[in-house]
Image 1: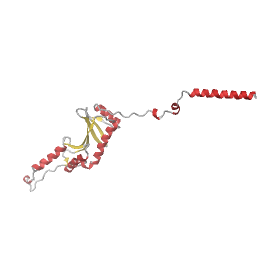
Image 2: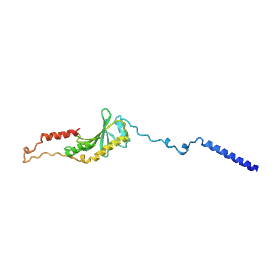
Image 3: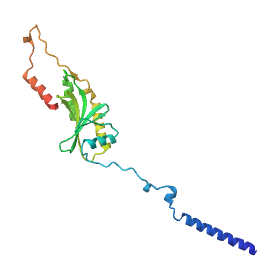
Image 4: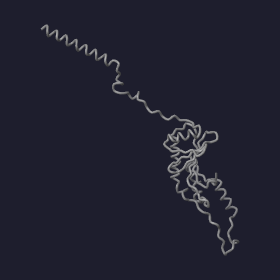
Length: 216
């Protein structure tokens, strides 16, 4: 009987010692370290910090961060393509704005933009107030212009602005694509140049007025 009681007391003492050792073993181990970090302690990716671009170098870097392939074509101009359309980006004189010009179509040496295209693009300027269509007489090309404030910019926002221009270009493609025409010289009738109908002053003034509204 005494041996049984002694054995029982030894078993209780052994169990107590084992429990104490286990308590000491895990006392310095937190639940978080044992089962992995909690949601609150997981390192989360930092959101891009909005910034003001200092010049072409920082603009080029931001465009690359947006997944684009920019090229510095001069000390002040950066070029990038969106949906195969080239966009030229530069800064305003005081660096408060980005000036973006998407080149839509170029006319040949002896071609001019058609009247229908010209009127259609003028009407599109009313529909798309965030951009403006223009015709560069010097470069002989149709362009889409967009100005963006140079503040609180991120790579995602800049890319979204460019993609917005591309969507507008796609929506109006029927107005600017392959719409240039070669002006025809008036042909005299009866074999004499005296019979050619001259352009009247009102007609000439109207043509100049339309060109001035979209010229750059």
